[in-house]
Image 1 (cartoon, one colour):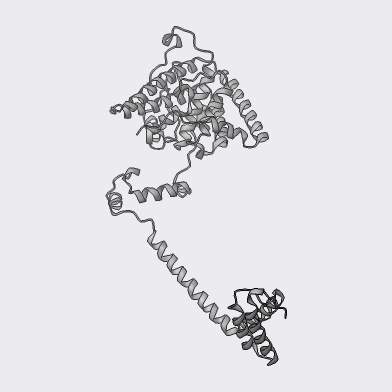
Image 2 (cartoon, helix red, strand yellow):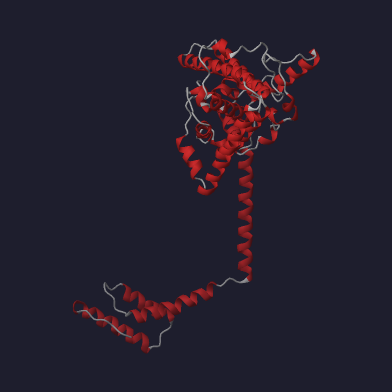
Length: 400
């Protein structure tokens, strides 16, 4: 065994070395070796070489590991302990779940039992949080009846209006049934104007802009977007629906003047992919709305007049709800709604005067724009969506 000597500690080392000789001469057992290690440990310097220490430690560690090998009885005890611990965890988890059950407050329950209508503002803070979580996880989707757009129904192909643009006379019973369906589900074909549509020359002394067809695409897109967003029931929130229309349509909401169908659709896609509406599906949803625009255009002038008339009713309903408001921001929105209503009515009168074959050509242009957008999006991956998303922003917010 090697011993390293340092000049300042020779007397101490001699004593240790003598003890070492005695230990080995007596062929001491393991306990004697431990005593030697204790003696060496109190010295303020290293006296045993690394080779000696490693050998000693390796032998004893291996011995201790062998002693720690569990027998069957030890294994069974450990298994019992783990099983008992796991059962306790499950019980605690069940208790926590019971405490977090989504129960309604007593006040909310009483309103439901009394038949009162429950609004979101009537919920407590905890109930609102649970409701929003359920919406985010799609738990309420199964409670919503799927809505079929009226412009995709077979009856939409048979829409006809009088020469002055008004709804054709129908039996009173049939008309009442249609209006009842319109009021309750919002899924029936909207009726046309109740009064004759004037000629464009009566509304303006100037010739209509050649860009009205482009503006029509913008308006139809915003209408389809809003009805899709509200599952066809814009009557449930006229102000909110009108806000969406003004946000989506650059023509109605921002006084935009797009000069091409491409520009009009790109403006609409920017809003569709904006953070406020991206949850609807982003670019994919926007491309689907292009199909809706094509469907409405292919139905012809009568269907477009009914669509524009329904949009006019939407805006008028929002105006009525805002009429009693005195808030300055509400006043600004009422001004925007009034301007949008005039534009919709003007376009509706213009559509009524156009020849029937004009709409199929416009639908073909929208179809070509959609194909180009899909091809670009397919080649560039998500770059096209990122482009419209980065540019898109909500330009009109609903005022509280």
